[in-house]
Amino acid sequence: MRDRFSSGMTLAWWHRVLLALWSLFLIAGFAFAFSLVPDRRGFGTHQQLGLPPCSFRTMFGIFCPTCGGTTCFSHFVRGQWWLAIKANPAVFLLALFCAAMIPWSWISIVKKRAVGFDDPATFVAWGLVVFCTLALLQWGWRLALT
Image (cartoon, rainbow, N blue to C red):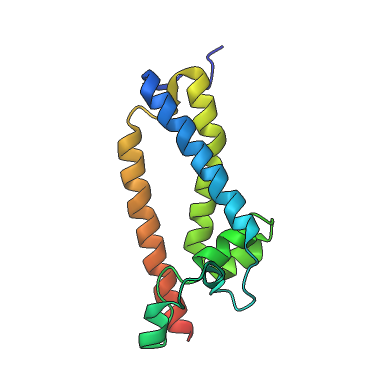
């Protein structure tokens, strides 16, 4: 029987080090999101960090494509997925992707292969295109509803 984790590009030692650092960065990001209290409005959680309100919203009176992103991550790490989706659906999908990257990174490190991907760079490029498209679509949807 074929091992389902046997496919994928072979990883050099430095690829594995980068994957380990990447997964630790993601874990730290999720831990940081947990330290923030989600804003009840569904956006504005980033202001707890001393950052100003969204310039786009301040200048034009409408949400920007990433409004609610920090709030979304803050809800996501608490398992409040419906509130996370309401805060920003595209960022919710990004949070899911980031969460999946952590175990994938460690499985790939152990297997010394980019499990399931012969060309990870192409996958990442397409992932960015999909995320940006979803962010713009959800932004258009939000604007249409306001």
